[in-house]
Length: 309
View 1 (cartoon, rainbow, N blue to C red):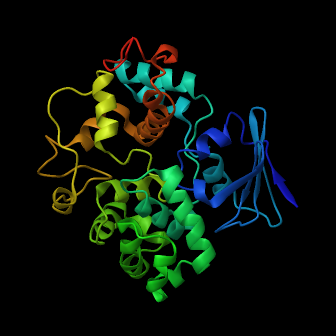
View 2 (cartoon, helix red, strand yellow):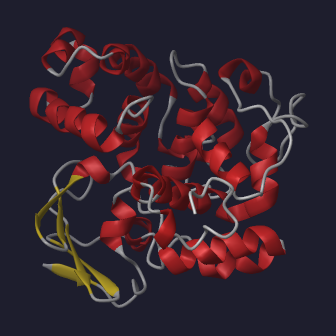
């Protein structure tokens, strides 16, 4: 058994797993112990040991895979200096509330990540997407079988997300591979040409598979929160598929006829390489604090225009 722990301090794996698209790939058989039950490094055990994370597996693991799994590939504290004072104060508050939060992922599970992201559209990720994923693994075993036997998808459920999956996955298999991340702008366009894949799905894929931390899935909920925190003013446009297919570039540089109105460059100017981490923290905050009306205990209540206090 191979064990790894000394390099992964300051990480709260349980907290970080909750907003991650690898969440359905793990089970928690006992408190603070997680087993990877699907995909790459199946059988991997992750243990939370106070302020550190220990990984153990029957086979040796690559250091980059461990950095992805632990979220140590991106240290939010190390990027604070690049931020202007106002967004920096918000990030610092998020860091106080969620000090061990990282973006944990497994890029080698890029097919499973695409499935999870695709199925997460317009539904409760932890209730529906996670349940669908576990049923998919039981019924099909391997993702390729979803394309080969699409009629079996009815055994999982009747939602439009599931019904649209076989066609999208068939094109994904044909067009996308691991090395596609080497050209992220081209990859984004390829993803957007897949039926029912919009900017939110494409950008989530770039963040969790390509580890592009300046990219983040942008939606109305995230933008509403930034407006309530006083970070976004005036009108903006949440990107849509039609807009983004016309863009020359939206990842490494932004060259787009809609860039003056689009929310993407505005958010990226605020948070830079921490854009993906901030969106992850905001998603976690909305689910665990805002939707439960826990404004009284929220460190952001002083600046939040939506606070009930």
